[in-house]
Image (cartoon, rainbow, N blue to C red; front, side, top):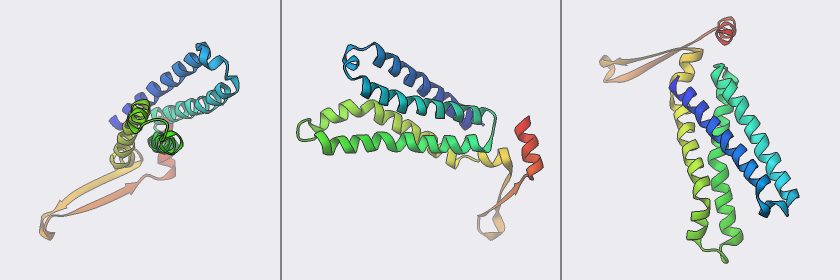
Length: 165
């Protein structure tokens, strides 16, 4: 359960950051000259904030789709900063040095790294299975230390009643 709640807190922090960035864009004089670009940023990051809010609701309600959305959001937040950094190296590298690009992109890359950690934590954690079924891991000493893993999934009726609780 810890992974789900910590991931929900991480998404709330990102939502607050996205809202703060939108407020900064609307109060900055530099962005006032580029209202069309500002609108595109607001639409992109606004839709991302809504997506994260839906993921937080799904995680807190312990829904299977909330888990899936959070894994997908963490994957997106991991790949997006890396893609932007690599694209900027090809677009502006001759004019702007690599170290300067790295300094500029460091905040985005940090968000990507943290999201990568949550992505791996969610995928590797047993909490997903324990919420939607039973997971039994038993070490068998007779077979040289091999591990037997048994997963018993809940029925649809049990899943629906679990979702309502």
